[in-house]
Image 1 (spheres, rainbow over the protein chains, first blue to last red):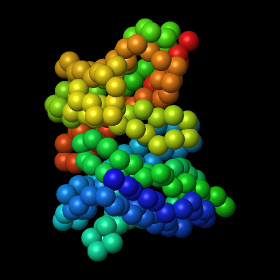
Image 2 (cartoon, one colour):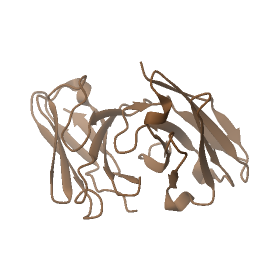
Image 3 (cartoon, each protein chain N blue to C red):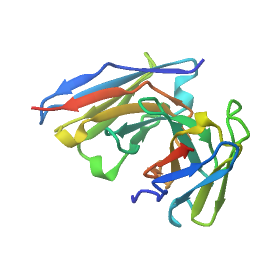
Length: 116
Length: 110
């Protein structure tokens, strides 16, 4: 079955960077894009961006441009999301999900806490 | 990209039907047949209920249905059950591999 397994919780200082991984299995990695989203506590879902697992093409949310980088490693069927210059506003659960127009399978979420 | 507009909360009694609206613009909901809906329980991962406006994944009961008219999409849950109490999010493709989400609707089963 399709599985997306994310890396564990992270605690970061303001100004630092975080890199979250999303290990996929159960399907041909290059046939589906990976979407990244986040959800602050008690808030809604925020689309962060998308990466093609086929050719690495990306599209990022305008409000994150310049701070976020999404990559994939076909050899390990893993997707990565790096967010830089963290502030307390970036404290959230970060999700990866398979797909581009509809997100059928999700990772379990990674809590990133930004605090001094 | 502005968020889609959903009611913050809706409620209904067991057995009734409820409809959650999702209003966007001609650049997202109105322009594409790629509206999806997600159900999320507190502390849990979102689950896909509806894709492509009205299609249901095989494991989703037919009590859940989706539709769209102009810039507004809707999710209807019929035969409401206690287990349907959750948060519901709509999502629309907005072109150039961009998605936009609604703010979420909390469904209370009375």
